[in-house]
Image (cartoon, rainbow over all chains, first blue to last red; front, side, top):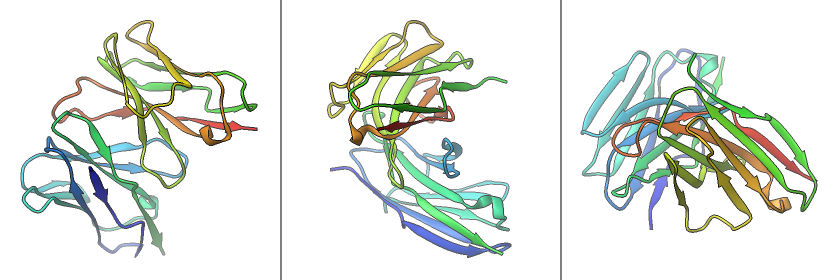
Length: 109
Length: 114
């Protein structure tokens, strides 16, 4: 079966750095997405990785290792507004998007 | 601004009473998706349209139907809602189904079944 694993919940302090990990087992691979979802709202796109390595976009970076079936989302200089769920999703060989259940990030002052 | 709009934002229905949720987009995207998301769970794809081609997920219950009368609009019909159908329903669009095309989501409709 296809599987995406992420920690259920993480806590971090305002101004700090946090890394949210995602491991996946899918039938083929056509890219990995990270989405942010605030409580009661729709997911919004953060990043897309299809090649190995680090993609940096402002305070957010995303890393991919296809050989390890592993990605992480790195959030720097955390702000209270970063409190949200972060969803990892992998596009498989049939271009189906397989979603993780998300990691709830709690930011404390 | 180009966007995905869902109406209503909140819908309350009674057990077994049909309900229709609507989605419209101004992005002119080829693909439209309907997801069901329950609290702290991954979004679950119900079906998607590529233009007018309908694609049903194998495990989507027959109770759920969809219509896409034109490029801009898509509807989700729940014929006989049960208590287990209470969830957030998300509509999303993308230009294509392949590659790195991100999905753009509407704000969702939260369905309550009494």
